[in-house]
Structures are given as structure tokens and as C-alpha cells.
Length: 329
Image 1 (spheres, helix red, strand yellow):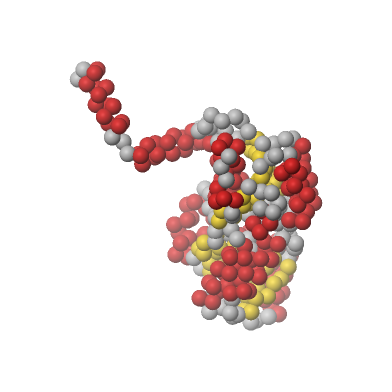
Image 2: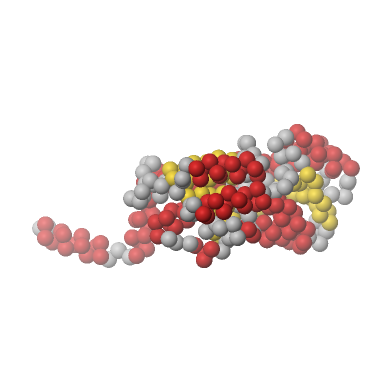
């Protein structure tokens, strides 16, 4: 075959590739670049910082960070992360990044009153902000481009509907962080649609022995409780231990998903979980900031971008188990 003929054949083959094929090739190139630690774009090395209300050792936020870091590699972003469960300290961390003149901010608004002032400072400084996970109802008013996460009230309502399907009559909603408006919204949303009785209990989420003893004592004193609802994956296993120690037959259900929750769903230790896809929250927040800096894009016209809720049961857990083990679900 002559060089001219070969060139013609190759040209025809390339021209015949579908748009889908081209897109897949681009996506494959992006994945390969990310896997090799190389950016898939040639935009400037912008710096984005994320500040959350996470306490120490909360594995949920490890998954959020995993998504954010993966997007940061792809988008040629220097990614910074800090956290503090106290609203005042969280605001101070945001201020420190404002002082560093970062190119974009990602924040949570679990305690919005403490964050309002520093959010306005970011807006005045012209630093784009995306809120994630908590604070969808005040995100726009605080000057954020958009919010990425689940609507906590809607998520709670989905729980109430699921409890009704399971013929539950009395549920205990375990709030592991006082003052967190998102956790209150979850319990209140569940109570709204649940035909049974919903009761709240407040525990110190950073002290697991306290969490277990508090739930155990409540189950021992009230045998009518047939469901314990925890609001974070790390607390589900503790609630199951408390029920076992109390001799309670209460079903344990939880918000969020990780490898341990997926395994517990499969073996019947847990009834269901509510997944809000934390990996997606981190990934999309970084990606949307990059798109705004690069192309002035604002996804959804500024309205919240929902990543949940999705009710996960035993039937779903096996399919998701491999993703939870690698830390992306």
C-alpha cells in the first residue's frame, strides 16, 4: 500500500468516527492523564480551597476530598483543604484562605450564621464560592455561585416514606452535632412524612462510647422504639452495637454510605442507607469552579445541583460494594 493510499484510508477511518467515539476518546485521555497525575487541560494553575464543618476522623469527608482531589488533578488545580466543626473556627479558616487570595472557595454552611460575614467578604473580593453538602437554602443569599449536595429536608422526607413502607411505628433520630441545621432538617423531614412517632436524641459525635451508651440507655428505657436512624455512616455500626447490648430488635438505618455500611446492608445488620454521593459533591464543586473561572459557566442557573437522596437497600449494596472499597461511594 502506498503512502498516499494509506493516508487516504486513515483519513476516511478518522472521518468516519462518530461523535460518541470521539467523546469516549477524550474521556479516556482525561482518565489516563488523571491516573498519571497530569492535568487534562492547559489552563493556569489556579488554587481552590475547601473548608468544611467536619470533625476529626469523619470518613465521609475523606470521600468528598477524594472526589475533589481527582477533579483538581484533571483541571490543573492546586487543592487545599481545612476543617473545623465549630462555626467560628470554620469562618476563621475561610478568612485565612481569603488572605491568601485563593482563586476559588468551596465551603459548607452547616452553621450559616457563623459563616455569613466571611461569605460576604469573599463576594466583595471577587472570589467565586460554591457551597457543598450543607446550606442549600441560604447559599444563594450568601453570594455563592451554586450549591452541590442533597436537599436535607427532601432527604428526610424520603426516609419517612421508607419507614412507612417498612411498617415502622416509632423511630429514634440520633443527632450527633448540636447546632448543625442540616441534621435537624433530616430529622424534621423524616418526621413530616413518617406516619409513626419520631423522637430526637442528641449525642456527642466525637465520643463514640458516649454515642453508644446514650442510644443503649434510650433503647432500654423505651421498648417501643423499633427504628434507630443515624445521620452519618460512622454512627450506624455504633447504633447496631447499642441495640445488641440493649437486647433491642430495633432496625438500624442510616444516612450516608461507606464500605462498612455496604457490608452491613448485605448481611442484614442495617435496613437501609441514604446516599448523597459525597465523591460527586467534591468532584463537581471543583469542576464547577474551574468551569466558572475558565468559561464563566454557572450550572443550573444558580439553583442547587442535587446529588441525592438515593435509598440504598440490601439489593443495591452488592453492586456498590466495590466502589465503597475504593473510596468513591
